[in-house]
Length: 313
Image 1 (cartoon, one colour):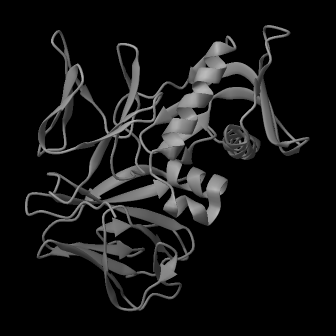
Image 2 (cartoon, one colour):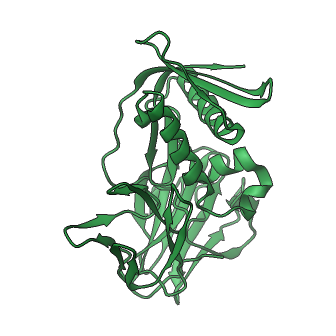
């Protein structure tokens, strides 16, 4: 299993989540954080299902701990209720009471236990990456101890983000690392395209989907792959539900949740590149059909359909 351990120069952050997206980040300092409804709490919450003095989070000896302070509605780590003190890991999801969701994030230097791979999304070829310079045919991938990845050719050099596909000439590549639930710090395009998707899990031959540009009659693009159609169905389902609730920028779904919805328990056994490869192939089908592949929007750790209309059957 791939993991990122905490080092002495790492920072421990607690992310307060809303609709599965971070809305606030608080550093866990040397004395830790008290969380609850009390005005004296380090993170003061208005959630009535949270106790006045609900929980404490702190770092000690390179490890991170959570203690439930005999709260009324409990503290949970990855949906499992805890009692007393437990150790938590980078990217663990915490729930306090019924409605407050947080995530543990350890930032800073990458430990030697971290595995990275470079994946050619078209050919499906994988290259294991080590710290330092990794020579690939025609270019070099430089992995720094600070987590920065640079792709170097004889004529150019660019910094690339882990888990975000990028292009190098005619190549479509991805540096795959630990799953990350938080959005990238880069600007996200909020454009919604005037497209309509029709999707079903029970078509004549299984899952099916088709997308149309509402401005151009006859522009329909059909998705032939059952897996690709199922991914689009899940994304369309999330988009429709959040549109109905009037949410701003509806439709984002965490990639870990998307994998689970499509592949179920089997998702844990699939290689972590499976979803990025499927998403890349959907984009290629849309582009070949004359549609803008940006309708399948992405940011680090999440994906959404940025389109106007949804019909599910």
